[in-house]
Length: 187
Image (cartoon, rainbow, N blue to C red):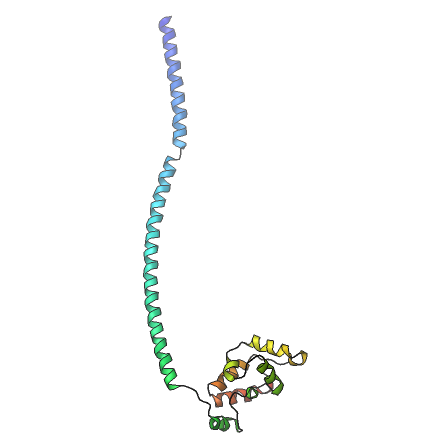
């Protein structure tokens, strides 16, 4: 019986070792090793793609810098040429020819919709020239009107900066035509 009992134990131990090996194999198979390998491969691919994108970004920045420099040079040339050629000086004869009446320089009443009282409101806000009026927004114009009270809120100052710009630049005929087309603030 020793022989038979030793054979049974042999098979029991062998089965036990086989079961343990199977369980361990199952858990090792489920482990993150393949997943980690896949993740490291993906990480390497992403790092390569990131390097390419950084290279492309550097190239784009260099092109943008070159374009910006060229644009600034062109803009500076344009400014120099414009300043030399188009320094506007008020010419009352040209204004009179377009409007058929004498125009005083920086007279805000020339703007369609602005009368003496509204001109006074703008002067209170230190807006005294066509250039000053051309450089503010319609919202600021509305703020000036609101400062005068309820009776000035009826006015629509949306076009006043544009009209002032035309006057400041000496575009008399264009200003006159625009005002004729939009007489009394109606669009």
